[in-house]
Image 1: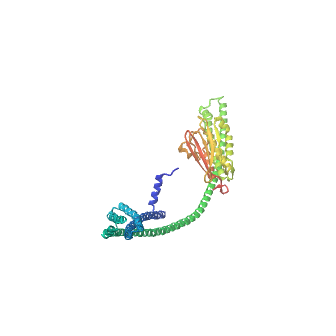
Image 2: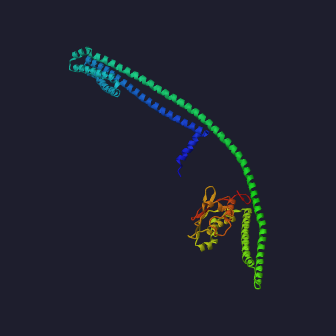
Image 3: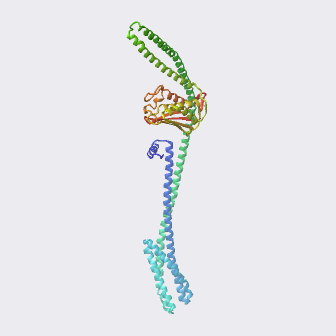
Length: 508
């Protein structure tokens, strides 16, 4: 069965409202866990920001190298150009061509960076423009030299156009380099601040976690000390309680024995005057017959007073019948009390019992009654038990007899005897019928002495179930009834799987 969320929430709310060490420890652990989560989240954010700053710094460094590559490539190309113009040897142009191959990717990388960061456009565009102009100037002079127009080519170099482009390119690259250097320094400082903040937060969090751990350890130690103290107190109380229970049990058993002896003595003493009453009733009946015979003889010779005839022949026999019925009922009650008293004094003798065979034998003993009424008794497989044989036979026998006695004649009677083992070393037996049933208000009354329920059209004094409950309790068990008027009854017997006697004749 799934737990009720509402009841769980109610228990949690009560736990949170009630001050206790357990609540304090739980709060400490939750606080420490929450603090670790916050620190981890903050550290993660700081690391991500540091990584992002480092990436921008790395990209800035690459752009600075690209700008330097443009400058170096231009210088190398210019040197190669002038060597070619002075010597006319084509092998001097190899550095010129290599510089062109280095310069184009560098300019492309600067353009990409400017596209990602529009603030760089004003510094990257002059580099690209001046680099292209310088390269065009060198291309013209090289072309003139290849055509054999060396004088014009040298005159173009002497004009100072190339030098101007190179000076402006160098200035533009220095400006770009300064801008990037400033940004790199700023971002490096920010990265250092984030790193310092991360270390500081982790140090503070570690210190707080250490403090919380020490507080939790102190609370746990105090909690354990309280538990140990409570356990010691409980052990002392249990030791005292065992002595008190043993003493009270002894007092109770002695009181029970006194009550049983008293019941036996009272029943025995009541029987003596009851026997006298029954004897005198018989003598009075015989005397009434003698008087009736005398009246009969007197009626032959004279008239007898009608009131005398009525008193002797009607009133006296009726009164004697009432006295005899009352004395017989009182005799049965005394016998029942004596039976209860004797059963209470009898020593219990535990032994392994085949309950299936026992119940079947009891069912067979009332077969003539069930056959006459068209009823049947179904004895299912019953778990074995170690208990007192006589008591178990009396208990099961009484319940089956009652079930047969109070069957409903309007439908076929059915009595089922079943049982099973239950956890904890217990066994449960059931005697179920589809008879008259018992009203809810009488579920407890039927186990009381001289109390009966329902229509009193069956013989009995109301002692059977009282005797059964007394016997069940002596065996350390319990008896309950589930019943509804007109639908039948089920008597549930619960016994320990093994009867253990505290002392001879008594169950624990």
